[in-house]
Length: 368
Image 1 (cartoon, rainbow, N blue to C red):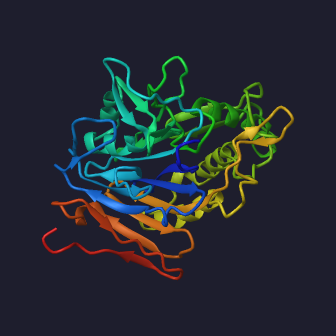
Image 2 (cartoon, rainbow, N blue to C red):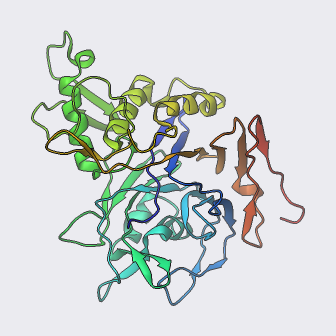
Image 3 (cartoon, rainbow, N blue to C red):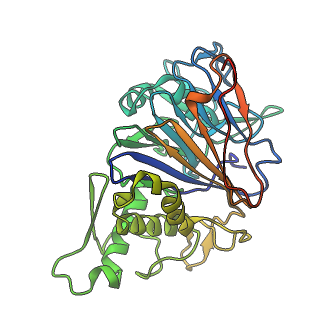
């Protein structure tokens, strides 16, 4: 049994004015709204009781984000008052531990986003904070625990972003930090293997290779990825992948991100509609798990299938500490700004799920 984590796609886009935006789909089976998913804010100075910790966590930076279920500390994504934005996505190769080793500190997987947003102002602080930490298994009640099958992406207002993964068998639970990324991620396999797969695709794609006198390359987010026909891969061909497998979504999103100039052709007022339309390429309809899998086996059969669909699409305007959320089955967007959240209490905020809505914004509370 795995952690009920999200099989998703996350991407950083930069507007024409240089402002960063973070989009993510949240793809899970079942119905997270029935399970209690909600938008929540934590004020600065609040004391949070986290699992497997004797002392409460003091919130150094106010947070606004989306909780997976009724447990508000199980944030899937969020932004804090310093503009640090982050979220967790499923990674089934994750190696978490039941308890931290002597001399190290443990963080329960489903609470790592909350923990880091509460303590850190930027990605440098995240990098320092995860040193000496181990990712712990997730408690599901009645003494049951499951592995923390997840990895994280964090983005700061400067545009720098990092990815955290605990998939090293020699260092169970310890988080590896990837500072050189394409500014995007999906799910399994681990990030280095996703890059190898994309590198192989670049070497096979007829659109990218036709008439070129040297191997093609992809340059995004300050990283250059070169084509490599010998790289290990999961793609079945060099054609543009169409499935909802995590490796196919990774390739598809990378190419579309590149073709759209990483968002730099969009004005800030266009980022929500144009970025959301770009994300439509990875939004999952109900597909019974048929086209959502991890990879192919030696007989070229899909394995690791998951029945899921996109429960919500979200955009974080990092500079404004504001989120825009569109639930499945609704045309409407709920807009929420951290500065409008009450500063004296934890607050659950309303989400518009009307099928034919526009943009709904909650207002500042009196005395908030």
